Amino acid sequence: GSWRGGAQRGKGQEQERVSTQYVMYSPAEALHKRTLRPLDVTKLRTGRRIIRRMKRRLAVLPGRRSKYSKHGEIEFKRTIRESFKTFGEIVEFKRTLKTLTRARLVALIDISGSMDTYTDWLVRAMYLFSRFTRRVEIFVFSTRLRRVTDYLLVSNLEEIRRRLSEELDLWGSGTRIGYCLKTFLESYGNLVDKTWVVIIVSDGWDTGEPELLRESIEMLRQRVSRIIWLNPHSDKPGFKPLTIGMLTALPYIDILAGTSIMEDYHSFLTFFGKSIKPMKRSRYQARYGVSARPI
Image 1 (spheres, rainbow, N blue to C red):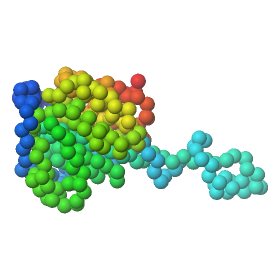
Image 2: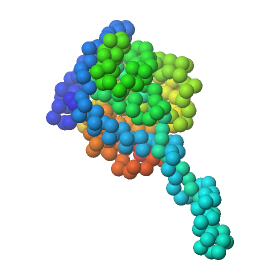
Image 3: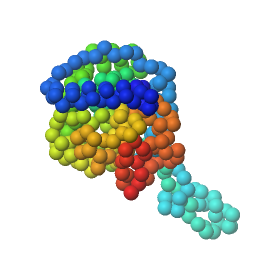
Image 4: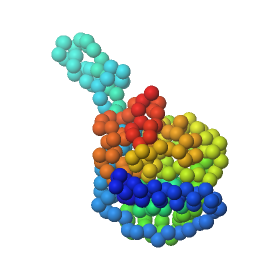
């Protein structure tokens, strides 16, 4: 996309300046529908592979698989089988522990005017996130929040494109991130707990009150397992999160990554690491344009 790579950086900076003017001087709600282009099947194929890897890295729930662990539950059948080797004497209790392979996901996706350049990517992200796990909720926001999970449950890509084009009217408006997070907590906050991961997609431009954003994202962070923030500018050379929204949210974000992770496997590994094991649930500190590191 045009937001990646040093060769096109100047163009991206110009787009960012235009977006800044829009967000700063056009706070009024100007709702629009959008005629969306068909989803790119090739990019979806790559995205599915990355989503599977992301699911393993963000897993916080045990699956069906088990591993032997001295801290797990006693497995009596294996213990008895092993005792045959010592004429029925139990020398050691064999224990197993369920491996973490699952996570529940909430995706909150910014479709305001400053994100117009990335519309095709945003639609692909909605589709891919909806396939992340069985328990998933997808929301879009600009000046208001709207749940779009049901739009994405159908398997027909053209039907998804049609519904997002014809029935969604939040495209190209201003941005009130704090207000929309507050709305989510008030209307859907009882659905999430420490078994859920939240992914926010936004460039951080915000016309709302910074204090409302701080209060809302702090409350959200207390309820869920992790908050991942994908910023389309984050993987540009020299990126620093200088928008009010990003500066306010940064202390509560576990990983700040670029949107290229959804279509470039090398970029995904840069931010999430090469391991296929779940990330430790210790606190993470987001850094600028690189993977978060434990503190």
